[in-house]
Length: 193
Image (tube, rainbow, N blue to C red; front, side):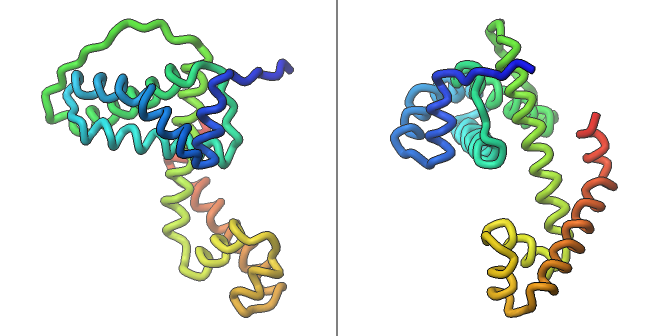
């Protein structure tokens, strides 16, 4: 299997995942104006453009933190395509508006499209997880949240003032319940395809 090489623009992904203010400001200065222009010339306004940028940056941050996102294409192309697709999805949702669409035919490398697709799938999976997590009982949510951020189950048991055995069994049951809810979801079935 061929290992993918990272792109020099990986510094933007790393900077985002580390909340590096200089890198984030650089992204806003270099890449956001192009996105704002695109959205404002395609039935949007400045506030909507800002919302799209924020949502995409959060998605990239989450993917970098969760999956260690490796950028294999220029950040500009990746970021712009994610914002563009997010905006087009917003327009589809509110299709009662008249849409004026202007697009420059830019050839997009396969790696940009592939990375964008992977990020969108990640976001869909995260959204499904969050939705099903909210349907769990309060105790399950509490045990799982603590187990996500706490190093050991002994610490979780101590925080909850319960036995280690109880917290291990509860986590196992809650994880099973969450997994079952996700797998029974129609969204899960469409994500598997």
